[in-house]
Length: 321
Image 1 (cartoon, rainbow, N blue to C red):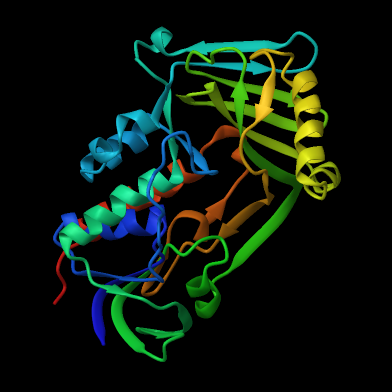
Image 2: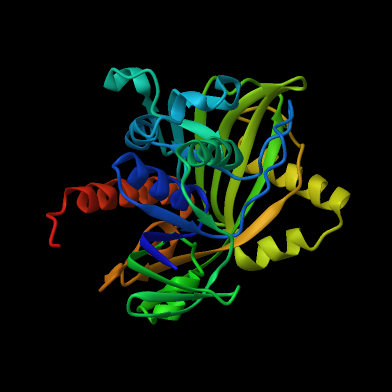
């Protein structure tokens, strides 16, 4: 089998890459297992949420998918409050920069859902397999296929099989933290403010989400020291929720009143990673190319920036055949 451009990976970055190239009249094919997304439910939110920057919002709008995300699942960030040592505090407001919002908080699942719809609408070919081997100009899959292409794009995540198969240089260093993620009911309204505390035990962030029938809701991202996080993750569910709520009461200084756990607690190791981004016939984007601490919320935004730049370069190159 032969393709002009083969995109490995079908997460947000992979789907965006395929769509951006297809919209620029490039012949592109996706290589990845198909994701099965459960239908969205009222008051049930995907555990992973992203802070989408204005630049990323404009790019998603250019792809034609931003307006397809249900408005009820979007939360504009109209301000930020950052707390440091002692009484240290920085407050940012969107109106100070003559904007209506600083960013938008969006669920991972909602972005993927509209991207999948757009990929189907454009009729982008999709091979349901994973890369297992590579040699210049050809890839091998776990289904036993050999696929030739002019360009292979690795959008297949931090553990990128394409990057590994191609032997591209990759460096990783642990931050010594685990990112704890959970959704919370808040006693007080968040008014569209993103809150962040820099503490000895890590960085705590509370991100605004749409209200539920139980009231105000926020998403917690706590970059907690590894030993403490693992102790918390190992607790039975009820004891875990009670202990987390006690810690949040002290750490958040009751800024949003009492906080109650409303979803399952997830944890993932935090690492700083950098890969060789390009080689003859290969380009890496998103987590396959780089990964950094989530405290600034720039991981996905950097990945979408990769996609936008790569699509522009590919579509603008001079023909050589």
